[in-house]
Amino acid sequence: MVANADAPAPVTVATLNTRGIPLAGTRLAERYASIAESFEACGVDAVNFQEVFTYYHLRLLTRRMPSYRHASFRPSAAGPAGGLVTLSRLPSPDPPTSASESAWTSRACPGSPGSWHR
Image 1 (cartoon, rainbow, N blue to C red):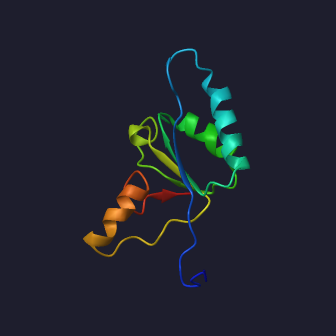
Image 2: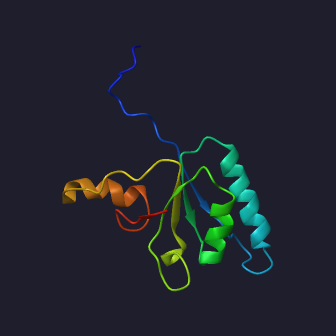
Image 3: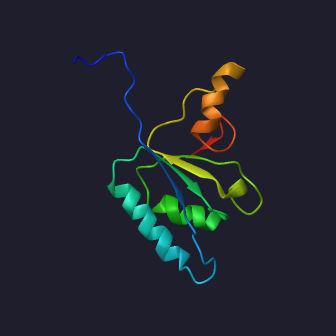
């Protein structure tokens, strides 16, 4: 089989609920450090995190994930809206130019298209 030189490179995406049950007594700082170190050591290109409810917790992840330089989330007063955050080693794709293009973008990362923050 001959590889198609024009084909885009595959992208590996993971998803993870960060808090788990029970909500109290979970030692979140230690948990987030372990999560961050695990993803930093593996080959995943982008991670969709759930349950990242405060900016403090977002910082716990991002400080230990330096190769994931791109973050996407919809801001709210306390932290990422709905606790949804995408961290990526790859830059955001160009914003969609039509409604038909935006369908894949909204499924690819939580938050609105073009909401990438550095």
